[in-house]
Amino acid sequence: MRVLGIEGTAWCASAAVYDTEDDAVFIESDAYEPESGGIHPREAAEHMGDAVPRVVAAALDHAEAAFGADAIDAVAFSRGPGLGPCLRIVGTAARSLARTLDVPLVGVNHMVAHLEIGRHRSGFDSPVCLNASGANAHLLGYHNGRYRVLGETMDTGVGNALDKFTRHVGWSHPGGPKIEAHAADGSYVDLPYVVKGMDFSFSGIMSAAKQAYDDGVPVEDVCFSLQEHTFAMLTEVSERALSLTGTDELVLGGGVGQNDRLREMLSEMCAARGADFYAPEPRFLRDNAGMIAVLGAKMAAAGDTVPVADSAVDPDFRPDQVDVTWRGTDESVSRADAGGASDLRGAEAVVELRGDDVVKRRVPKGYRHPELDASLRRRRTVREARLLSEARQAGVPTPLVRDVDVPEATLTMQHVGDADLAAVLTAERCRTVGRHLARLHAAGAVHGDPTTRNVRVGRGGYATGNGGDNGDRGDVDRTYLIDFGLGYATEHVEDRAMDLHVFEQSLVGTAETPEPLIEAVEAGYREEGDGAVLDRLRTVEGRGRYQAATESESASQ
Image (cartoon, rainbow, N blue to C red; front, side, top):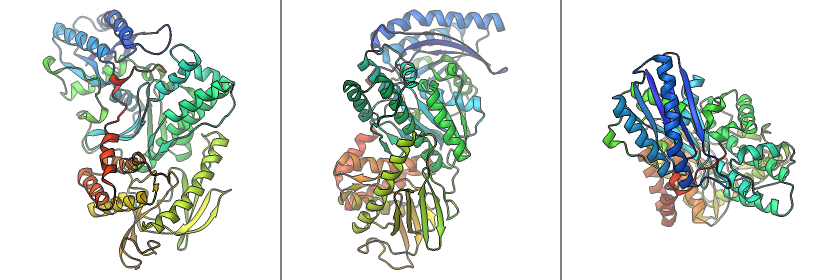
């Protein structure tokens, strides 16, 4: 099969021909380069109108020269997400070609194509996929017939975030390569670092970077530190996703993935875990029609085509809306049994059993700058010890802390539970987690990373400072919250809603039937918590950054 792919979600007009027999991809691209600032949607659409006919003609000429007349068996196009005016131009061209060539039409999700091209070329089975592109940044894994969102940016895409700084400095598009070049001569300065479970935020670090530049910090130092912080955040949440799912494969996608420092961090993290890492060659990382053609061929082979009349573009097309028809329904990114005491390695710490106690040591992360790493390990150790105690006083079952060694980032704690919740999921246990989170929030704190791997279930052990759920008997099945390293004191309803969001994301990404479990969590929270938090949770859920129509796509691709 040979498929013509057409890409044009924002800034790059591209056409490609993919030959499935030889696994060969020809790509012709024409990128829009604004004279100043970021991408202007009207100018981008004008560029798309001029460039799409040229790149398509070049791709068709290649197909005819290589394979003869009637070489194309299907036409695939980027259906979304992206800038509406650009998408409509590409969609019109694809429909016209499908009719003219009398071949099937395939509508491809741009984000899924970024991830599938890496999976295709790596040969991995079911990896965690990190997409680091302009208007988007998220972690996805295939589970129950769809790509599930494991984590995402809660404000702006990583490329857009970097571009906001470069526009402030006065540099032209694209900004990412300029930051990378100036970072080579920079030194470390402290900037905000925001990770919430497997979600993350870039707004604070961008504001701080601009302020540092305005205050006279050398631009090289700001660029260096921007990379060290933002890419360490992406690497950390990727490791958290590997730990949650139990997979040992990570694929990188998106234009920001061309940055050498980001690829270096991810590679080092995976090597330390014994995981495999793959980043496609640069022509498949930036926006390109090759990935559209490759995924289009898989979809066409599965019969997943679209009638012209039903092929409208969707600027807000989320990857978790795509029914993945080209993969087996029994495949899943979730491989962890997440079971008993032998599973002693998490995303940031190793745990050693010592009788009735556990020793948890936050290990140094070689991918992080030494100053940043030392600061995070120290702060999280102190914070966890304090919040474990405060949570117990609020009636939340947690381990007793025996000893705190701050210089070594080590806690000695009571060993609780027989298994992680991930291994023994039930609706009633999830309901109990909802009640625990409500009590914690009422006490003025959030957990920060309440996934199914950070809840322990089992018998024995003293539960809470005041009895709490299940009393203090040693013969009842208890549900404990553990690993408070990302927690903090807060009264904000948004932070509380994020706690619930993180837990529910972990259910969606790993559970076989997450819906009744999510209902149970929220029912438990409703019993003891503030209803306004559940209302805000609905807002958080609708805040996905795949909605590219809401702002212009970045430039760091």
